Image (cartoon, helix red, strand yellow):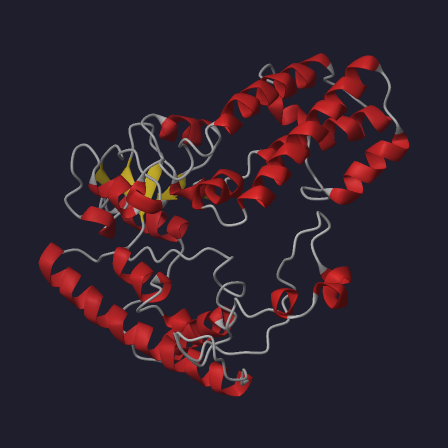
Length: 348
């Protein structure tokens, strides 16, 4: 299965998903709710798409309970304040060795304060109290699921599935105590006499396909971005990136087909070009350009990755690869260690 990037879906995408050997995927609530035909059970049962791939829709109630900036657990005053970080709080010269290699001030992970309240006056972070609060919230979450599932079962006359979606960036990054909450949640479910159980998507499908409980629907265009569609990633502030991305993608496909069996430094360069292309396609760059927060940084990162991609392309074609320069780029962008540039070849 796959969590679609930004939960983005458009008509026909399920055929590509199925063609890649992926059996199921996750998307935003209205992607399933606006499906055709309308799914009778909403997001509380997955839907089989025309391709045969299965769509799980995000449950808005569990999402709000954790994600909401007003009502969500991470905003509790006992939890660690993500935004109060020494990378911003302390003098630049004092922390410069810990800052972003591209030169921007950034988060270091060293945070001394708790959320405390909405004002700038913050109290010190006390880990034990935060852990106790995480356990309290885990118990609350369980009670709420008991209530929700009971109501849905009575209304829909099925055993509903609650697709509670939280990305890894939330648990531990934005919400430092998130892993503690998740740990306590599963432990409490295991030792308590609750009327529901946890299950993997594949486990649910294996169980319910046999009993023919799946609904049939083609999801609608959707994402989990602001307003639910593509506005965040395609607008007058960031639309310029796409002409570069489309051209670069075409170039990468050509290189992959021209050099189907690269070795040595050529193999390294092609793999690094693939990394730079993927990094330039990062959805955060247009998102930040739209939001206006650190827009200069996002523009610089996008430009850097595109320029490094084309530098590598030119060096590959001209046969002027420099081990020193390639190593420098590899050290700077070391993500995707197992990448294989051949995935871009359209002819296998």
